Image 1 (cartoon, rainbow, N blue to C red):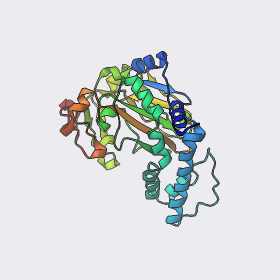
Image 2: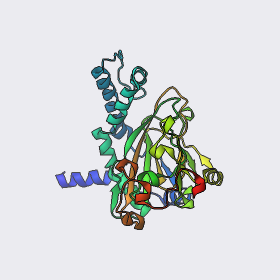
Image 3: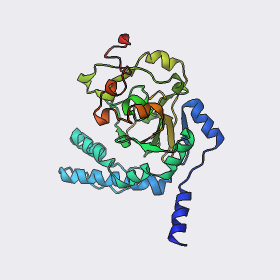
Length: 299
């Protein structure tokens, strides 16, 4: 087999074709679950091994004895909770480090992600949101960083025609607090937001944003909490209302978020595909009128 033939075969193997039912479900419900979308051994396992190594590096650097912790897929994060108990800052070091793993970057750039987005959005020129992909850790019984019900757009911008791919590193259980999705809520369109003053609790920026008339909106749609397994992908519209569940298990909830957008969408072009909080931008500097202040009554 020639090098060009091998390259073509690899490219074809990384393609993914959505069925008509899958395409229709996404546009009807505002989300889609793709079971077994990633190969666990090829795509997920290298990331988990990297996480395991980084935990060890951080412990060694800061003189924390984690004892014997052989690698296993089920306990890839062994030692993380121990690090956190010794010094919360060390858990933050792990949090910032793991998203820089090359196997994770490789996953973000997978052609099959691009293929799914292109089919869902009829897009030809696709962007990967700057600082919009990462690995999130939700610790057991912590509520400070639980994401309230929100739409992705105000926290990301880039384009209204955007999609987030959410995939767990550890298979979800109900106790881990799966994502809560308001099924069909993307049909509301872009919802205005206000900022709750929760700075005393450490909730600032995107974590302090709330939807105007949130309760009324949530009541209009059924809530679903899909239990994704490692290798599954939950694909959500940037306008689908969703929020974090509370993790009451004994394990951290590890999840990956990959965000893509359509360069051709008019709003994205108008704002020059600007970023939001991660880019240090003010909401109303980029999208005037979207943020109504500190109280919903100001809308």
